[in-house]
Amino acid sequence: MVIGSIDTFDKGHVVFPQAIMKALEYLRTHDLTKMEDGKYLIQGEACFVNLQRYVTKLPEDCRPETHKKYVDIQYLAAGEEYVGWCPFSPDLNVVEPYDEEKDIAFYECLIPESDILLKPGCFAVLYPEDVHAPQCAVDRPMEVVKAVVKVSVDLL
Image 1 (tube, rainbow, N blue to C red):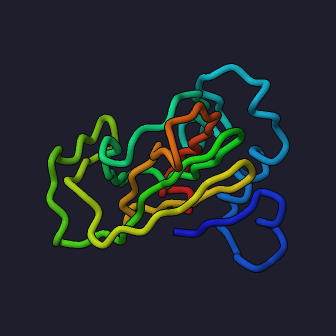
Image 2 (image 1 turned 120 degrees about the horizontal axis):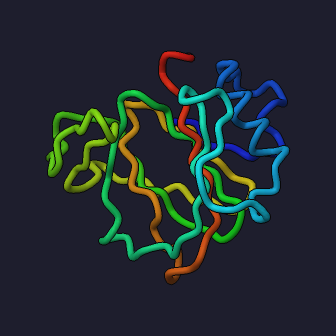
């Protein structure tokens, strides 16, 4: 997992693969708050954005998940939320096994749990070994505008 600011991702502190750089550049150059919710292709089905508006949830209602086919880049354009995180471990209890079509598996809880605060302009790059629980309210549920870029692991 890598967290950062959309304003400084290309300053040379972290060397991202080209596909992730392209996705971050897309996020930096588009005003997502003025775009409609939906799917936007960056490089076909290999790299695309799911733009969504929703109200964050209480942490106990947020489900930890992993993906195998895609890296997630979670980016906040408006509002704020916590994303729970932990490294993948055999100690995790699967509550919904991996669904290949949806590219997702769900877990009972994060062990150990860390929280990442996403505010406008912040992003988190979450790799297949990063178990994450998105959409968690910070102080109280609030509306957010969030982009989740899906980058195929085949592009890395």
